[in-house]
Amino acid sequence: MTQPLILVSADVKPMDGYRWHAAPSTYLEAILKAADALPVILPSFGELIDFDAILDRVDGVLATGSRSNVSPDLYGEVPTEENGPYDPERDSTTLPLLRRAIERGIPVFAICRGMQELNVAMGGTLHTEIQDMDGRNDHRAPVSDEQSERFRIAHPIQLAEGSCLAGIVGPAPIEVNSLHRQALGELGRSLKIEATAEDGTIEAVTVDKAPGYVMATQWHPEYWAASDLPSQQLFKAFGDAARSYAAAKASR
Ligand SMILES: N[C@@H](CCC(=O)NCCCC(=O)O)C(=O)O
Image 1 (cartoon, protein in one colour):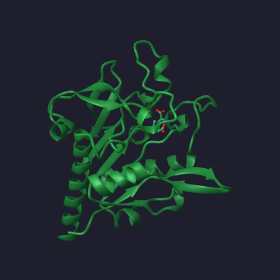
Image 2 (cartoon, helix red, strand yellow):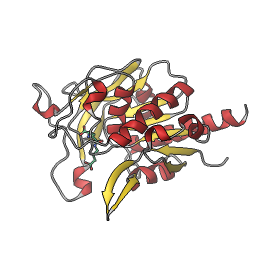
Image 3 (cartoon, helix red, strand yellow):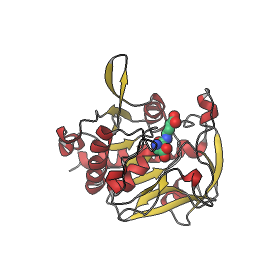
């Protein structure tokens, strides 16, 4: 069977005098090698995109992490300079894309900012600067020039009993990395908690009774997908869901 096609979100960034629509290679390589699928970056052109037309041609959607934050005006709060940076073009693309992919039963994997986007897309809210909240730990990356240090394994998470995540990686707690300052607040429509950190921070969600596969993690399985078993299992499960979706589409 041909490799399924996975649509990947793009950050909009100034670089070398141009504006780039780009995604980090770590996500693209994890899709290629651990999910055995082909990544295709979707530029963040918001309402200029015919989402159904592009979703007709792919078998999965992956929303990447990013240092930028979802704009708070999308969940009823006021944007501030300290809470930035923001990426409104990405917001205007990923939120409708995720909603439509879920409605159509197209497999979705949303990572870190991607999970926060999924929650806001479904009507939920975000906490900002969780390290300043009572009872919360600091979930930010260690300060380092070394990516492997920034993405080092940071804390354990507990998996919800009977969750989709436990079905993929097994029921025992797993250890994950952590590079975020925001976290899910009120849950969006139909979102179901799949895992939590010891301070109560929501670490993984799915969409209850979604017509297709949906997994979202606050941590970054893409970074260790070549060497860490749960990270590999998550990408394999996503690739398998995309293959099943592609096969069902071909037989229609
Ligand atoms: N900005 C949000 C999203 C967190 C996220 O996606 N982090 C990835 C960062 C990658 C890096 O720092 O290199 C938040 O902070 O909660």
